[in-house]
Amino acid sequence: MTKPTVHLLMLLAFAGVVLLLPVAAAAQKQKPTPVNNPPSLVRTTTRNEARRLGYGGTLTVIGAPDGSITIEGWSRSEVEVRAEIQLRADSEQDLDRIALYNAFVLDDDFNHVSVLTSGTHDRVFMKKAKNFPKKLLGLPWKIDYRIRVPMSVDLDINAGRGPISLKSVEGNIRISSPQSETKLEFAGGTLSTNIGVGRVTLKVLGRSWRGVGADIKVAVGDIVLELPPGFSGDLDADILRIGEIETIYEGLEVREKPGITKQKIKGRLGSGGGFLKLTVGDGRIFIQKHTVNSKQ
Image 1 (cartoon, rainbow, N blue to C red):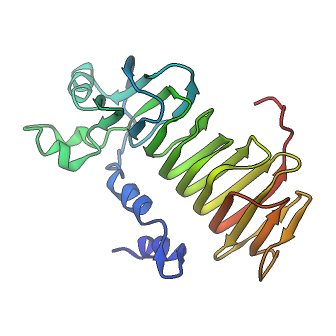
Image 2: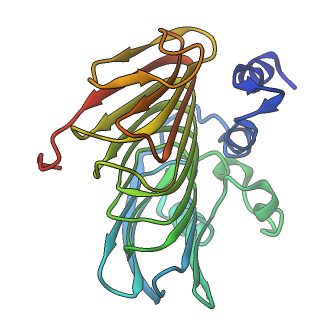
Image 3: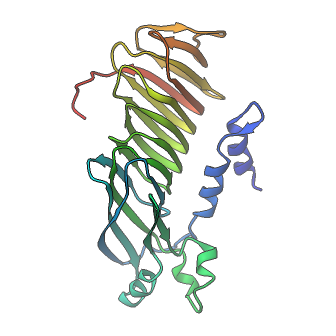
């Protein structure tokens, strides 16, 4: 194991638990082979798929090594997936060949739909491709997903590098990415977010959190927590190494020691309630106010 990898894993070790092991492993697994010269041709295709999914069901997304994932809740009992696939190569023949492997499939079972991305970034998958040219394994490609789901649904998102956006959904939600600019808008549920490098913005829509709470971790980067006026809940925030916490939200009180410092917060807002836990290795945490009816 290299020294940078060891440093990343140790960065968020808290109480003897390595917090970002899944993200670090995913980052290594998805690391592409370096390309000396940018491919001269670009091909972009769009696919639309839909599957039935009832309220309280589960959606699993295994993303591409690069690309965005946007998920929004709607009133229908189905999942709608729109995927924009961008491939790069130096010839049409090479584009045709990699298009057979860089794609996604929808797998559906009883009240569970999976969006599974396959491609040349997956060495195990490519072992099945006989006589596939090694020069094509490192070509850059991406998929941008736009997905609509029932408003009450569980989500399990394992993303690559790229922006992530979720809103109008409530359930048990897990998100992981090695590098992302992540924007979340929720009123409740159970949220677990694990980002290697980047920024997570959580906008809480209600004056209390409906459900267990949220646990957000960023190894290197920032967390922005936006709360409405009069919010009630319990808040833990930690900077594990370098950085500080900036709080411009009124009404935050000490819940237990060490209270409120630039490195750690054990606080309570209003009458307390759902737990919001924010952890950053190197970076900053911002806690600020938003207006409930502000434009999204």
